[in-house]
Amino acid sequence: MSNDFDGLSGYFSKHLLGKLIYNTDEGVYILYEKYQITKNKNTCVVERFTDGSLFVFSKLRIAATWAILDRYNKIVEAKRVIDLDSKIASLQVEADIHKKLQNKGSLESREISRDKYLAGIAKQKQFQWELDKYIILAKKCQDKGYENELTRTSRK
Figure 1 (tube, one colour):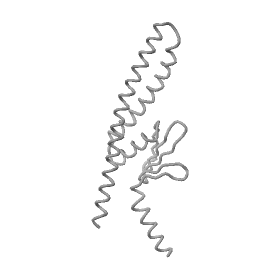
Figure 2 (tube, helix red, strand yellow):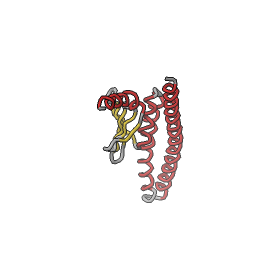
Figure 3 (cartoon, rainbow, N blue to C red):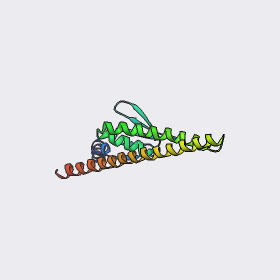
């Protein structure tokens, strides 16, 4: 009986875990047995097991998007996700500063702060719209990968 379980366990480890995304008891996410996402207080850190690289993202959803795109060799798109996440986070910090400055200083400086705040929010929305497109692309890659795997395994 133990031998049957060991065989099943080995098959599961070898064939299925490399195709799954799951959450461990410690709250760590494992993607395709190639990436690990650890949530910290304000960030999510992705470790790529193949080379030990670490990537920091502002949100779990963005970290997972990057890992999925990287997994499916969408390298240009994955790099853009890193860039967009960084830009959005930077713009958020700037917007917070300009929002606070709207209530201080002369009328002219308050108006300048308001204009910079509104411009930053507009850029943020533009970058978020582009990032949302990459999130949808990652979902399509994931769905296509599962579809291909179902097709491959149903032929056996």
